[in-house]
Image: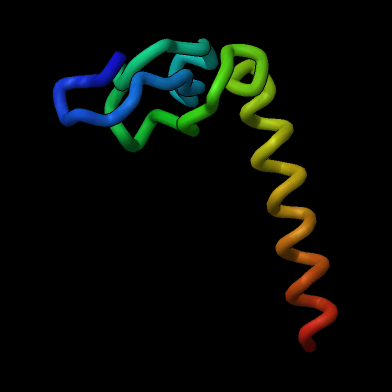
Length: 63
């Protein structure tokens, strides 16, 4: 299934409502994702936090 722009439908985390949504329902500014499944979208904030920690560690190692 594709959205109106021809992109595959996906799961998103709405950072404004703190809810998981299927498809691009919220404004881009309020969406985190896309995710392949609902479970990953539910963990969006943890995934973002984990990735940020990895990036910080990489930056510290580059210094």
